[in-house]
Image: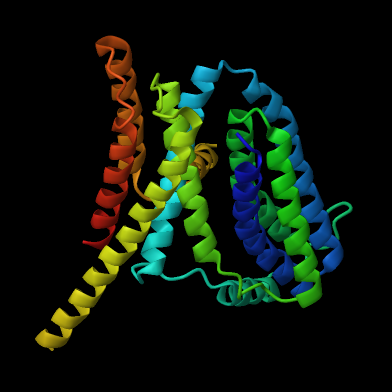
Length: 252
Length: 66
């Protein structure tokens, strides 16, 4: 199988998470202090890199059948989570993730926090805010890099996708110096959810002993099928939403 | 100590399982049943996991919006 779907899926997933991390880093840097913010970000990136370096080779040592069923299950569960959230947001049953509002919340909290210095870190609040933001958002990317990469025996390609996304988002963030509120996060999450669910289903079933009709070519049917299912769910919930609004108007 | 362990558990639960544990349960059950059907009955049930995944998504969305 080509490495392109792997790189693209990891790239898009990583862009979504990097945009959210950027919002937190900007809030810490612009309202507190850039030096401590960068220190927190650097330490978080080192921790994430260590996780990939340590777990990457370990995961690929597992027997392929076990790896596929475990990773397939995790990817399908993870993908369905993303897809569920994206469908609920697209249909108004859950609020859209608003980077501008998230930035304002972080800025307000950062302004109210006191200044504490610890060791080499002159502003502990900026350090921990940046560290936690990058680490927590980065963990999802590490999970996707390891599971997706290990299953295709190509963690390197997954790392390339993630690194490219971090470079792009960082470059745009430096140029704009504001939260990237215009990035269509929900649409991207929707696409990544479709890919993770499809690949998780494919690998999980294969690990359970299934032989897919057409082997790897089955993915060419599975990915669009999951996409159509998700779009169908969006259409269905939009109808539910409209019907409820009409019923409420009629009752008023 | 207990509070810290609890917060670690809550983080990983939220990270892996998410808002609806039924989805994870359905996926795991589907894979287990598929393995049984394939290895015990000798039936190549490739359709079982996709069908359960579709059902899990629809059911979870229905629960979330009802």
